[in-house]
Image 1 (cartoon, rainbow, N blue to C red):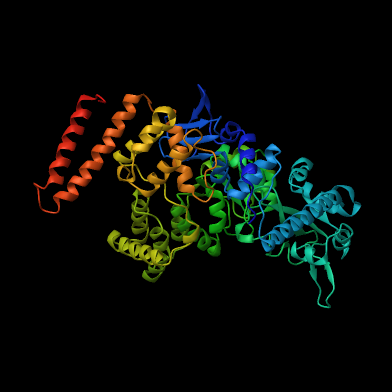
Image 2 (cartoon, rainbow, N blue to C red):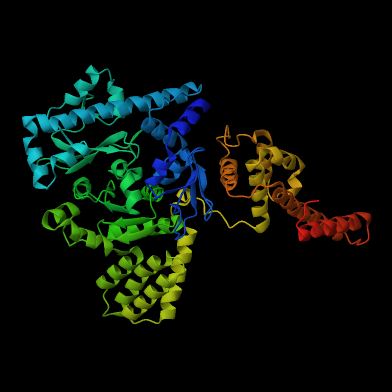
Amino acid sequence: MARFTSDTVERVKQAADIVEIVSAHTDLRRQGQRFTGLCPFHDERTPSFSVNPAEKLYYCFGCEAGGDVIRFVQEKEGLDFAGAVEALAERYGVEIELEQEDPRAEQARKRRARLHEALERTASFYAAFLWDSPQAERARSYLTSRGLEEQVLRDFGVGFAPSAWDTVLMRGQQAGFTVEEMLGAGLVQRGRDGGNYDRFRRRIVFPIRDARGRALGFGARALDPDTKPKYVNSPEGELYRKSETLFGVDRARAAIARAGRAIVVEGYTDVLALHQAGIEEAVAVMGTAITPEQLGALSGLTDTVVLGLDADRAGRDAMLRAQRVAGKRRLRLLVLSMPAGTDPCDFLQQQPVERFAELVEAAVELPEFHVRTILDAAELGSGAGRDRALAEVAPVLGAIERSAMRDELTRLVADRLSLDPALVGQQVERAGARAAEHPVGRSAVPAEPPAVLAPHERRERALLAMCAAEPKQGAAYLDRLTPEHLSSPLAARALEWLRANLEAPMSGLPRDDEELTELITQIVMLAEREPASVEAIELSFIELELRRVERLLAGEQQKGDSTSPDVLRLQRERSELSERLRRGVAV
C-alpha cells in the first residue's frame, strides 16, 4: 500500500475539524480551551471524554481511549489508517501526496483507481438512463409501486441497465477503458464463444459502495418476473467482496452514530424505504445472513445491531455464528420481528413509520429469539422431540457468556422441555466447550479494552504529563529518570520520545508504533489536567525513586545477606525518601 508523505498526514490533521467530527458521535460542550462530553467508546453518566481542538486530540479519562483525529475516524467509521486519511482529505479538500512506492504496489493502486472510475462512470450512466430513457418506464413504475420516491432513488444512485448486449462495453471503450479493466470491474463478462458482453441488461441496478462512498459494484434486479435469477450481483473480484460489504453503509454511517444502533435488513429497496421514512441507520447484507466481516465493520460504528433478516433454519444458523462473533466484539445483537411474508419496504407501504419504530424498540436479544423459535417448533409430546430440541438449543446458550440472561434462558428451556435444569446446564456447558474449541472469526476480534492501570503506572504517566506541561522544569526530571523508574518498555520508549520532542510531543510520531502514539496522546491530554508545579513534579519523582529503591532492596534481600553494605545503603535511601514523602517537602 502506498504511504502518504508526512507532510500530507500533517496537512490532513490541520485541516480536519475534530470537534465537528466527534460531535457526530457525542454532544460536546466547551470548557475553556477544551471540549468535553460523554465518551462515545463506553457507557458513562458523567462526562470524562475530552477533545483538544488545537492539537486535534481526544482522550477519555474513564476508559483511556485516545488518539488524534485520524485515529478517531479509524475507530468510529471502521476504516484503516489509509482509508481514514483519504476520507478526511476528501472531506476537507487536502491534496494527497505519496512517498515513492514499490512499482508493483503503485501499479496495483492505479489499477484499483481505474476500476473505481469505470464503476463510477457506469453508475452515472445507469442513473441517467433510469430517468431519461423511455425504455426504463417500467422500471420507474415498479419503483414507484414499491412506494419509493424520486429523491431517495437519486440519493442512492439507483439506475437501469439497457437491454442491449454491449452498451456499457462500447461506452467504456470509448471512454478509454480496456476490456480487461471492465472485466476486472465486473461490468462485462466473457461469452462462451470468447466474445464479451454487458453483465447487467434490462435490470434495475443499485450501486454498491464502501464506507467512503466509492463504487465497488452493483446489485441488479430483473424487471421481468420470469427472468432468472431475480437478483444478480457483481462478481467477487479486486474491489467487491460480498461478505465484507454492506449496502447503504456510506449513507448510514452518521445516522448509525447518532442513533447508537444499526438496523440490518436484506433488500436494497428495504434500505431505501427506511431511509425515505427517516430511519437512516439502515443497511443491507449482500444475501440472507450477516457475516463476521460485516459485524466487524459495524462494530466500528456502534455497539448495537438490530437484525431484520430471514429466520429460517439457514438464517438462524448464520445468526448463531454471528452471535459468537458479536460476543467477542461486545456487540449487542437484537432481532426485529416482522409479520410473516412482509419485508420493511412492504410494511412501510401499509403501516405508518411509527409502527415500524415500535417494532424496532420491541426487538429481542438474539439468544432469546433463537431459544423461543426453537422451542416453539419443537415436538414436546415425545422424549425424542424434546432431546432434539435440547440438542438444538444448547449451542445457542453455550455461545453466551455465563450471565443472568443465560441462567434465565436455561430455566426457560428446562421448564418448556420438562427437563431437570441440571441436565440442561450440562448440555449447555458441553456445547460452549465445543464452540470454544472451534472459535468463529478469531482473526477479526479486536483488542480488549485497556486494563485498569496500577497505581505506580498512573504515577509514571502523571509525572511524564507534568513534564510535558512544564517543559522548562520537566526537561531536568526527564534526564533524571531511567528505565529502572518505569514499569514497562513502552513507558521507557515514551520517556525517550519526550526527551527528544518535549516542545512538540505529537509531531512526527512513528506511524508504525500505535502503542507509543496512544501513550504520548494520553500524556499530552493528561498534561492539561495535572498540576505542574516544581513541588508536584519533585514529589512524583520521589515516589518513583522510592519504588525503584524498594525493588532493588527486595532483590538484595533475596540473596540472604541482610547486613550487606548494599542492603544497608538501600535501607537508608528508602527511609530518607519515605520521610520526604511524609513531610511533603521537596528538599
